[in-house]
Amino acid sequence: MRRLLLLAPPWLWLLLFVAAPVLILLAIGLAEPAEGVPPFLPPIGWEAGHPVWQGSGASLATLTEDDWYALAFLRSLRVAGMSAGLCLLLAYPMALGIARARPSRRLPLLLLVLLPFWTGFLPRVGAWIGLLRDGGWVNGVLMGLGLVQEPVPLLYSDAALLIGMVHAYLPFAVLPLTAALLRLDPALEEAAADLGASPFTVFRTVTFPLSLPGAAAGFLLVFIPAAGEFVIPSLLGPPEAQLVGRVLWDEFFQNRDWPLASALAVALLVALILPIRLFQRLEAKP
Amino acid sequence: MRRWGLAFGLGFLWAPILLLVAYAFSADRIPFQWGGFSLRWFAALAENERMLEAAWLSLRIAAGSATLAVLLGGLAGWALSRLGPFRGRALFGTLAGAPLVLPEVVTGLSLLLLFVALQGVLGWPANRGALTVLLAHATVGMAYVAVVVQARLAGFDRSLEEAAADLGASPFTVFRTITLPLIAPALAAGWLLAFTLSLDDVVVASFVSGPAGTTLPMLVFSALRMGVTPEVNALAAVILAVVGLLVGLAGLILQRSRRNLPGAG
Image (cartoon, rainbow over all chains, first blue to last red; front, side):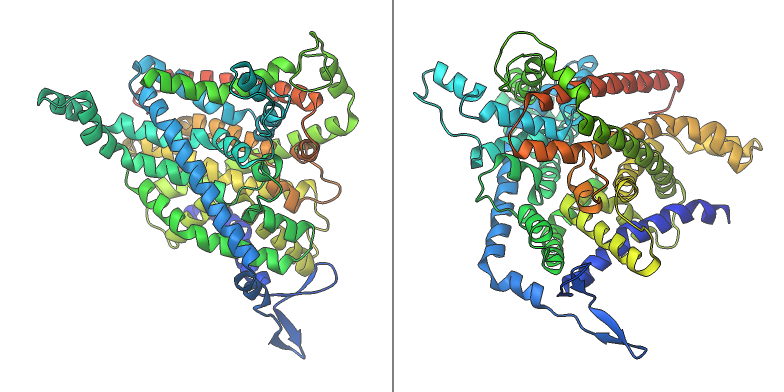
């Protein structure tokens, strides 16, 4: 009885604010757009005491017929994949450095990686706007080194978009990698070294393969939010970088096409189910 | 090699942040350009009514949603790690973890559709604004708190609670004297996490808010769309100082609690 009393609040909350919204999203994806507030006709209406179907698959059909949306999806998946890959490249040596540091230094080093995550997402993106513009620091450094003669247009480019993504999500890749490397039994590496393996061979045959689950978790932890990211592409990316998050946002806020935005959200969910399931599997067996 | 890799990564993470803070004290109107030391942008910030109003609203929403998130997420995390099998446990776990993996635009849009549907059926919430943002943020924060509490409960031995019960403590006394002190650091950390997530969120808030509920991130985002301004830099420096203080405080609390609880991991 008492158990039920304690379970009821989170159960009700989750059903109302997590389960119901997703179901409504599915329903509105099948609704017919209409003039009015809210700007759609519910897919199921009442007529003379009977429920009648008045929805349509028009929004879902638009997604498959108009190349614009398929391209936005491909672009998003590519940007998310590249962001996650770059994050891993940067995170791997960082995780190794933390895992091999003296135990008393590990926590401070981890805090240094995590603290930027707590300093606010928008200010960090804002900092890149200031640094990447034509008269900004990055161009100053490039010109100072004699690498370029005049400012390179960096801001509002794909490079700026990727830099912003990596900067925002890097801590997500470092954490699971560090955890995987710390779990690794040092005796395995010592054994390989004792048997005559060079440090590189030890890394290639022991350390690296054993860190792969952590690397996969880190990749997915960046990939999943990056695929639907809205803020970074719209603040740092080029105007033509129409990623799914941005297209959905514009359909909703500018075109006021709620059914199409909902259909896009459902499609994004479907596209992410596989990576999400994979991630949950990795998390379930540490 | 490893050291260089770590140094490079940390430099990449920190350089923009440190530059931003340094240039917040520059008198120049162009951001990231040095024009002599000045506090003028902090003064301008202190006089910006819209910004202050939005900041106050955001702080209230963050505190309220974090508190709700700790209550609900604490219960959810406790249920998932201590209740054993119960009816619908798999669904419960999936729903509790869903906000962690759902893209922000999906969370925002689906919650907005829920609020619109509720308004149509029940007439509540009558309009969207601070309350709807608070409910949305509590839902997301709850998922994070549940994970933190679950991890903490998994880290220590059940036998502590069983011993107390064997010695005649009522379930409520066991909870108050054993479980609660053990998960208190996780609850504090979870509250802080939910608080900063709420203070940082622009996407979900933009969807579920109304004309009367412009939060600080929404305001900063629309400012950044025009390009960065020195005032935004000053604001970031203030946020950084506050967050640094809070995180330092949390670290101290965690360290203390670890020392006071031998055997608790």
